[in-house]
Image (cartoon, rainbow, N blue to C red; front, side, top):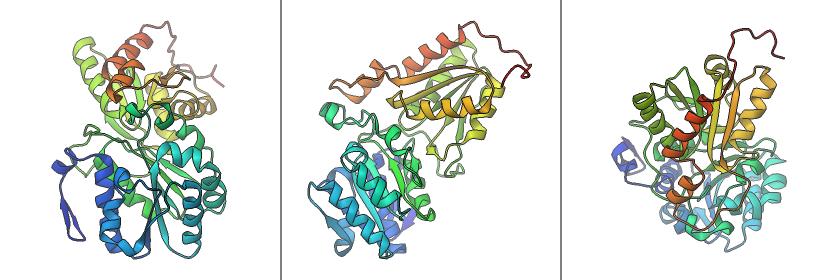
Length: 338
């Protein structure tokens, strides 16, 4: 149970609230502890739920209208003055419309700006390509000094928002829009920025996921265990940068088959980051990236889009069976690997 600043909520509330709503509550709690926190919105206080903080601390909340670039510039100024600005807008706007300001004003100066980017991936499916954030991770993980986090559910969102206060520098937290399924049963699982969480043990193949796809990866692993007798390891790679390279290379060594699953373009996101680690590690494996295949998504409900791109439970099961059927020599001699 969390009870701070007059707010009380439990793990059961997290099952009924979106990541955005949990974020709004946690930020309000943090506002009690840290008077230097200020909230910034670009006319999306209600949609991003930073309005919860604004209602509680109206003198520390600023609405810039539809002017994201200006908002990030002011956030940099607040940080230079010793405040801790939390900037909330849609992921697509934070990563693209305000990209130069995030990069140059905030990251280049390594300022203590916290970006809570909502409506990530295809979670705002009905709004179409203009509001689908399917390239944001590839963009922001290239910015020096920026920590990039993609929580799996509301509980992990609470951990991430609190943990970012201990990071001296810019942080980008990407969350969804809708009722993301709860992945964790309690808050006590040892969350740590930069450390993957093993959600399901396995020795045959590893599925590395982030955000909303973690739930589906866990469900797929359970079904594959029951129906196919497969031992599927699932890693929740909630931190895209810095990435848990040790967990990835351990999975390569122990399972020799890796699939990445993400609600994002397959180019440059989680799959690209994991591929870079594997290539640098010098050990071969069967590998496949599963995500949005370098295309713009159609309008649709998020669950339908996830099914279309095979990043839901059924799609992950299909991909695991496919890669398990490949002819792959998984010898124990690593001497031929470079």
